[in-house]
Amino acid sequence: RKACFRIPTGSSELDRVLGGGIESMAITEVFGEFRTGKTQLAHTLCVTTQMPGIGHSGGKVAYIDTENTFRPDRLRPIAARFNLDADAILQNVVYARAFTSEHQMELLDLVAAQFYSEPGVFKILIIDSIIGLFRVDYSGRGELSERQQKLAQMLSKVQKISEEYNVVVYITNQMTADPGAGMTFQIDPKKPVGGNILAHASQTRIMLRKGRGELRVAKIYDSPDMPESEATFAITEAGIND
Ligand code: ADP
Ligand code: MG
Image (tube, rainbow, N blue to C red; front, side, top):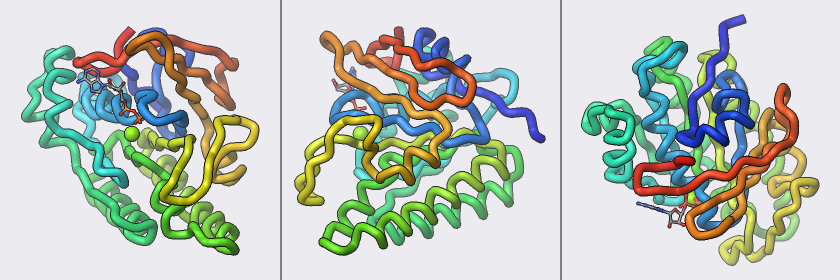
């Protein structure tokens, strides 16, 4: 078994409840309402993955964006905070925008091919968000079972990538009213969006909720080796912080 590693989140509190950061060879799902920091954490991970350190020195990032919310310029102040060169950081982020659920599946095959051709170079796969396009593409009545089947296929692909290439997989899941899909989702960790398929596929699940101002509260569910616990962090210009 390859030695797994952890990527820090930018918040020492969050890292502490995660046992040091987000672990490789596993899927970590972050879920929560709009503006709870899922995408800001994705941006922060683009930088912290590239911090010099054991297990992830010089790591490249694969970023699949389904919502068009990646902002490369957001990485600059985050890189500055960690004393890293922003242009070098940006060059190591391989970005792809997914337009349909099928396209998202194809991109995963391309990601796997790239990880295969550059062994040990990529350290993280970010998918923001994991099921948004599936909600849109399979929104009709009677399409739920097909959606869940496709979702399961995708998650098993993602799981395989995480283990085969020893990378962190960070996926986000927005849980709120979703007019595009014509449905309302509630935040209930016992009844996850994506059904149990997504919950079971993710080794660690982090629920985010709003606190005062720019503070957010993360609650850890289902971690294989950490107790259920909470951490408070801040969203700042320089990324996720204490
Ligand atoms: P989600 O992806 O969960 O919908 P985001 O990750 O986009 O949410 O987080 C949005 C929050 O991040 C907002 O509260 C916003 O104020 C904060 N934010 C975004 N950019 C910055 C920034 N440059 N400086 C400080 N806070 C920011
Ligand atoms: Mg987002």
